[in-house]
Image (cartoon, rainbow over all chains, first blue to last red; front, top):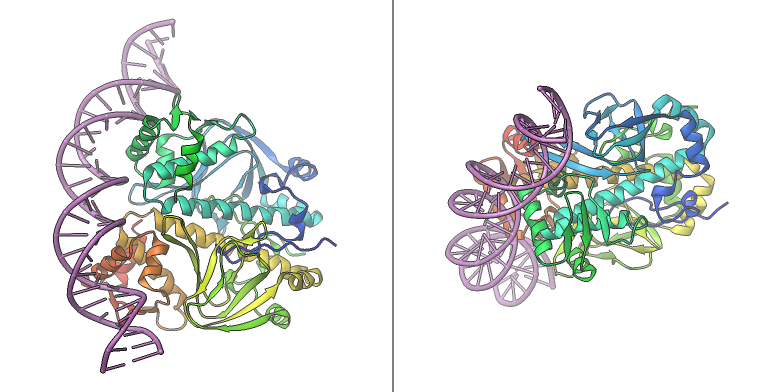
Length: 241
Length: 241
DNA sequence: CGTCATTTTGAGGTATTTCAACGAAGGTGG
DNA sequence: CCACCTTCGTTGAAATACCTCAAAATGACG
């Protein structure tokens, strides 16, 4: 039996990785690849959705779990003040659909055209019964989300708009790391989305972008693409928490 | 076999609760109670610690998992800017010690005198091998942490100091809900800790407290106790995100 | 009871937020 | 294919809120 690898995180009271995670790569995002993905794909319904498509609204009965095959989505919540708080952005291979008391707590909307796999709860139950390891791996993905939430916390704790923006760009950059050199990054969301995620006004995001551009650190080409011109100073801003 | 209860959360791509959680109460904090606690207690080392005791520092080799028997702790990280960012407060029955790459990522220090149970990784491994359900329950606790982190995100997203403070007080109030009427609440941490958790300066926390007191919403008696005088307006501030 | 850290209070500086208007981009229909 | 329209993004100026610095007051602790 594989030895348990328990890793601990002061940021939260829970295990980081237990035996069944030991054999996996460093990125939990890859957990559901390979044979398990095939097994799940057999039971999933695949949807091809346009951009700006509302997958579900907060408060709706939670009946499915979703896995992104391709594209990007945002999960958010509209506050009574009129503001919108984006909790997270999800990309290919990410999973979403967590709820409380049988109801989705956040709304989810596509940012780009998406291919999304829907897994019915009952179907998933059946799969879990025959594949305990899949069940555990689903749980393990929670750690990924937790890490994201904690990183989001760090971002929101910063006082300077440029720093927050840089940290978001950094996430997007590392996500595209394999696809291209790393300096080039695509921004699937709008400025408004970025603002709602960063806890800033859209104007502040715009000005922060402008500042990074004027300083020669980042070049924004179009609205959905950017290039990191000065990785050294960029990293300095990101790390200067 | 119990049916899987899959709950989904737009806030993160992961399962909320699977079969082994179905039989548990609504509060994940109670997951490790009863027989399992006894089983773990057999293998744990119990420490009695004074307030302000450093349990471990970020970066130290992660060798143990900790469970709080009594008292309160803070998990934090000192930034190079000199600021301190508190990630979370933990209380009785909470678990902490998560790490990455074999090292604790946050420091942990007691706020009050504590009774803390330490579980060695290797010991825990042995327990897991004989009690698969305990392993799963440990994992399930992650959801609790995730919820906390998301709530922290919501707090940090607010712009007004009084609102942030009120949300923290609300958490403390609901935590003491069973112990007393609910209006009375004890504040184990210092103003400075609150500031570091809320992403504010200590002065801002002080002024926010003052404001809540002048408005007749909360009365602070001493430095570690408060009473909610006007639950109606208090709830209004908390909910006015 | 005295010392020291913590907290409060005050005044000024700075960043972001708002409010308002302009400019650009994307989508739709003619 | 172009024009229009709606949405999104940028820019400017004033207001607000918090932050910083500094000093006094409170409370904790030995």
